[in-house]
Image (tube, rainbow, N blue to C red):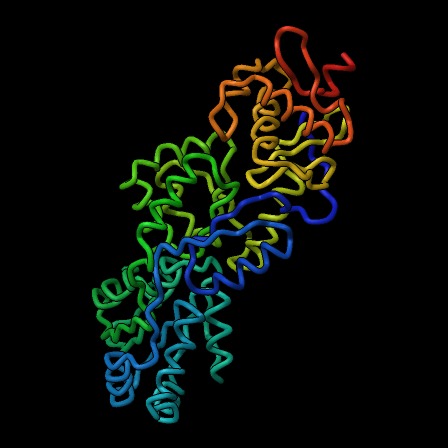
Length: 379
């Protein structure tokens, strides 16, 4: 019997979550930890700072010399970074004058916010937050002979430059921040292996390039198939900040959790809602609703003080959904290798003690143990 009742208190208690982001990872981790999660970090890419980027400074000087008709901002952080680079190079006032009469086109609310923060006004915003919608809008109105500045996201390649040039525009392409290799490739590979082995409840992605890089690491380590399988059976949640970030996951057969709005705050709230309201793994027992997670088990929303051995035994029994699990099967599930069946009995006794009720796990004479599911007891 599953339940959709919300968990009181900290809904992410006992969840082990992997954050694959580099930029703003500390902010994301803090928000998750505040809600009870145990957070691990394996950045799949690094962000190369824009300050001191001489190529960007030279491109800015060229734009000042030949002011654009249209400025396209694809990311808030990128547009802000461009303004910061110009300011550091002593070009801020000249840049403002050069682009002050241009039309500003934003790929989503965050880009619009950065435009407004810089003292300009966005003339049009792609509400879908996709480059495709932005490109379609400008191509439909006609841009032949226009001078367009396109500020790209970190990976640069979104097809806008080529589409605009084919339509007769002159394009100045700016990549304000760039993606670099991960600081620890081995850590990324190990995180993918751990995800396939069932060591995480959730893996979180905040950029499409970062998603691709992590999936590549999973593929190279032979872990991708296991990750997809765990996603399909519901034992591993993969969450992406928006549809663009989610696209590489969908391509390999994963159905990721995506918030309605592409913000870190929305992403955290969506993950919390998933665990608080849609707990397919939770089961109603005589002792209460039990929900086993990678970092612990919740009984009626309270985290049980279990050892790794106790958690492994309880997880195996909960997975059986009321079916009898033999002592031998439980012995093989223990994190430490042993042939002593007494270790299983000790682990069961400690789980019952932590739960404060013998009704959580039932003994089946000469066969093993099963979960004390309410539906079975009342049938």
